[in-house]
Image 1 (spheres, one colour):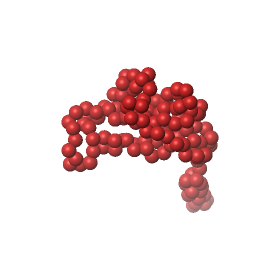
Image 2 (image 1 turned 90 degrees about the horizontal axis):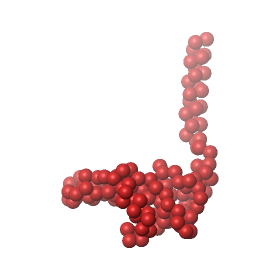
Image 3 (image 1 turned 30 degrees about the vertical axis):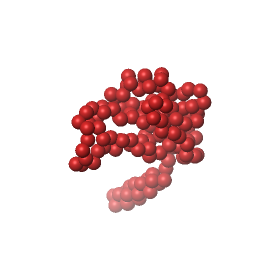
Image 4 (image 1 turned 135 degrees about the vertical axis):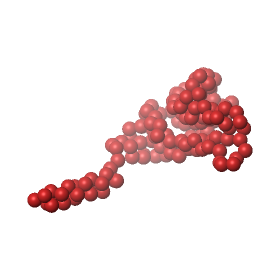
Length: 136
């Protein structure tokens, strides 16, 4: 009897693991990739730039709607040196939200970097959509 229960438990766990790999949260399936433009500092609206300046020392996840545009800001707070960049990984529309993923790329080992504090951030501009933005 005990062997039978143990075997059933193992089979149930195996089924959960196998099914779990294909499960996805409802509404998160990609409908389409979104087009975007990475903005230079001079292209960022002044009011948004002020908001970024106030919050750039912290982990920054910000959306800003203005006119027909949606601006998405991802900052990684204060870094001890220069040499950092940000790479876009994913940006798409799903049923339930807009999904945005970017990663901070640090300087390579041995790379000569400025010994000055930096505040890396990325601002993109895309079509204005009303869905919430999920930062991953």
